[in-house]
Image (cartoon, rainbow, N blue to C red):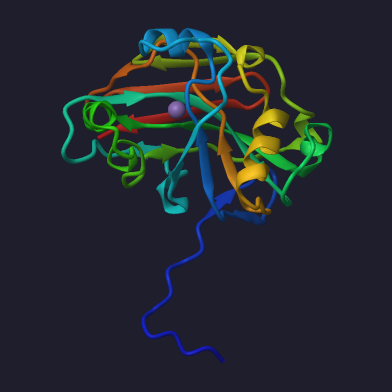
Length: 228
Ligand code: MN
């Protein structure tokens, strides 16, 4: 028996639609600027430059449907994204074989302390304070790929208090899911339990306490999150 010096942290795990099992999370990778219209609204060139990534922490994923407004920010933004859960991984995965590693999909929100992220960007510093804070990634239940098929197109949207704010199509991703898996696997060893947030369409904006966020992705239903 292993003697831990302190109590080990719990394994982060997410619900799976229609299953009693839960999905254990290993790492969370997030791609930046993966929809041209969002790159433009953030003041960047939408051309297909090499992708870039940042990470959130596994325990930033939160399936509770609640989002407490975080500390140290006056400008928290919503970013609706499709999350891709991997059942397996490896290194140097070919684009043509990347889809075979997918376990399922979920609706997620890459919540962002935009003011803090902006300050870090200006200074050329890392983004963790803007991106990887507590409960910064609300997430819905996982839909098995065996049920949904591979999701390559379909509406992705977000409403705040019933007002449409974000709308796009999964087919607008600059880097498609197989590209992302392959690229990541050239830089990191991917494994089952890894989660990829695949970028947000345009229309990101501020949220306030009391707001109701409803995100939808064709084939994945909707995710409702209350800001408190
Ligand atoms: Mn994002």
